[in-house]
Image (cartoon, rainbow, N blue to C red; front, top):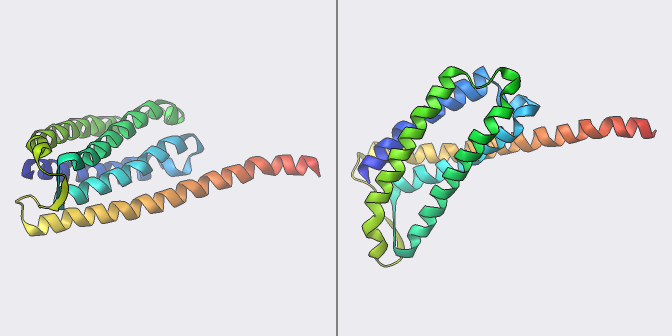
Length: 186
């Protein structure tokens, strides 16, 4: 699982760069009403990657427990597809995706594809073991395992923060939509 660990570590850092620079700084997606569906998928992605960072750094799934890992990876694929489908409409008013972000997404897609293939090849023999989830970290330096685990914990915090922001934005938009109707009724 060492190779998968390192690929995920690299992809995680590129993903953080994508979020901080493109999503938050350059495009300010969370403040734009037309981008809220895309923001939702980005928020869900934080939870999916939080799970992956923590699992890959610490655990091994055996037997039928591999189905849990399969669900996490299926969720990752669904979120990625949904995000791509949403981006065209979401970024239309901004002139589309910035070229750098588009390139970043290509690189990340290639890395995540390599990561998923590597995980699948690594865990394939584990399907024959008794069903369990065991503490079995990859053979990487402890400091890197701890670091990736902290990345997972940080991603959980980011998920909760972004979910609160997304829900607040929706509530404010709903109140704003109702306000003209309430004034007309008075």
